[in-house]
Length: 316
Image 1 (cartoon, rainbow, N blue to C red):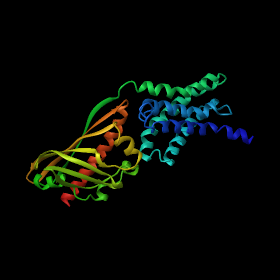
Image 2 (cartoon, rainbow, N blue to C red):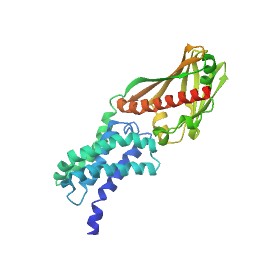
Image 3 (cartoon, rainbow, N blue to C red):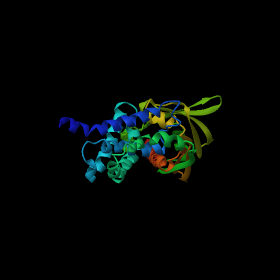
Image 4 (cartoon, helix red, strand yellow):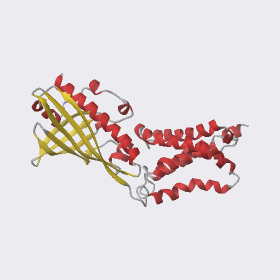
């Protein structure tokens, strides 16, 4: 009886090991191109298969319960994601990026395919479905990623003249953490800005943006029209990034690239100015719609909080 009770949960363990195996393949330099972490296969197909393990390897008639067909695949994927976090393969933010499509794929397809596959369990060939990623991922990588440029823009009204504001855009003064606030993205590990310092080198202007978690972004001043406009170009290759999965998988990869970050000052009157902050970025993947969902919201959150903080510094 005890053996039977244990064996019905063996599918969860097998699902975790299966997912971890493909996750480790994506980190191998000579195989990462074939088994892409941000591929349709890894984000949608592999979670579906992880979710099927407790169905196919259950010792009881799990497929007779629609609730279990829905919940068991989700639990299996959840355990896999928690394991990647505990082993340091992923951080909290990566779990959210991966988790949403993983849970959708596992839950929905657990119901749609679970009963069908269980009925076919007498045919041992059905287990070959777990080899699908070995075929689909290399095939998927034959097709190039789609590269798209996006732009996020927000503004704030500051009751100061453009000449009083402009130096504080070049070199952002220490930010009040209470004013900046602590929202969802900060809770899941997105670093918050501290301040920025500008310096000159070889007759060119550069800036270093300091963030929490010892993140330092190196920027060059690309265009400057005093009291009217300034733009920066982020150089991630010269920046000091964090040794965390988010930075390693996204900021150090070709999936996401910063474009120009710019401030435009539009005088309303002698003592009031509209400050417009824009950030251009490029996403290069096969799921740009999903990647941009996160990028757009993170950058929007950052711009709104930063502008509010700069306004507070100047008007306080």
